Image (cartoon, rainbow, N blue to C red):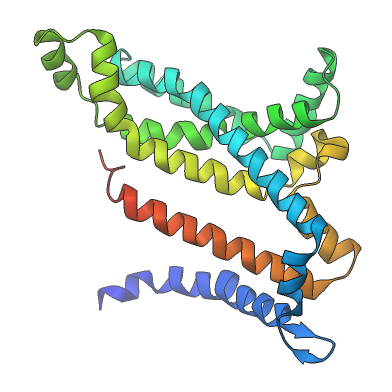
Length: 253
């Protein structure tokens, strides 16, 4: 009867995720002539949808690479040099700013960017997305860094390995599960981010999240919007499943 402990979570997912998703899936196959796949065909034949999807993928890829490059030096320092107290302090510095609402952070960031001459546009949107997604990259890598113990580092150093060898041959392989998990999280969240592109992107901020909002609430094309949402959820679900199968239990310390 141990499954009873999972019953509240199962009910929550059914009510707030699977049931609404089933409704969206039903809307996605509704057409003027009954049930059909016209809405899905519109997604692959309309140039606007294709261009927005491609642009969103490119932006998500750039954000993922940027957050990874910014996170690696910090996490390598945590893994190799930081004491337990330093790890806790660094983790706090990463998390505490994100207790503030995302809208307030975006407005504050826009003010900062404008003060240094960066106006609304692609550069401002990219900077805002990197800032917003950085903890999603750092935290999984931080979890993996717990696998890098001082005894492993000391053994490698005793065997004559330099710091470069230690990082390349020991630290990075042990961080790999966190890198994969963090990259996946950043990619998935960046694909459908709405607030940052809307506030910082200007005319460049029309991404998948903006498109879904526009199709549903501005154009009233519920069938197309539902089809787009179903496709995005399925693609993200497949990406998550593939990544999870590769990472496995790699995040366990």
